[in-house]
Length: 366
Image (tube, rainbow, N blue to C red; front, side, top):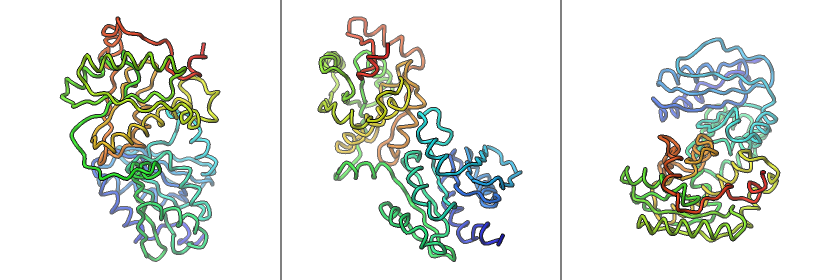
């Protein structure tokens, strides 16, 4: 096989090195699609090691030809022998805490040229909010990837005219989601925090923790998932009482259960803690992003993590894919720590405490 078909061009490799400088001394997830024998993976991991970048390096190659024997301190190598499109599609359908590949910071596409757009789309929901997509051979094989080139033009993409060509796309998913919601606003961040609240009992301890940390809190009640409407109103009443007790402003998002049902369509029959719940978290966070951005909040977080029935790592994982910390930072408070749940029970003895999460499907679980 000709060397040029297996080895990344030196100019293109340098562009990747330059981008890696952004992650010096950090921990990241790097995904490469199209390993070949492993030359580019080795060179990239060598550079990561030089820059003290730690984390996971995933590389997918359909054929069992990868030859990587080196180990690099702080970098865990995952060699996946599989058809990339099938593997990524299967991985995407897994619930959040079971995905083998997730929260990608850097994606390097160097696989089948006609499938570049498909790789991009299958990885999009796995990418962190502030992430990059690198594509090789965008001049030498341009005619085979015209649909991909059109796709990345929707984002902040730089086209490099090296010998074989390369594109580097800064996804900035936070801005992408705002654009999808038709949000136009002159964002001027202020030092204040928007707290996503699910119910009054869960809010008690969470508010105490945030006030102790001197956070300037506004409560955001957006429970489109709660059914029936009588249950929604009952929880809202308790939440309003709590806001008054703490003398905190509370924003009630307009109840719209139809939008929520549309968002989770196709996953109605999932069990609790499966894909439907992941989508529900995503839905809440997109609405949280919208209000925070329109009202200049520079920080957000959620009371969801206080529940022993909610996986905090899953919640943080989904938040990382929506909130770019350079725009609006999601503060990863795990409110169930330090006996937070029991503290919330103690503080809410005189409040209404529901016996199901909120949606009609969780109500039917028993």
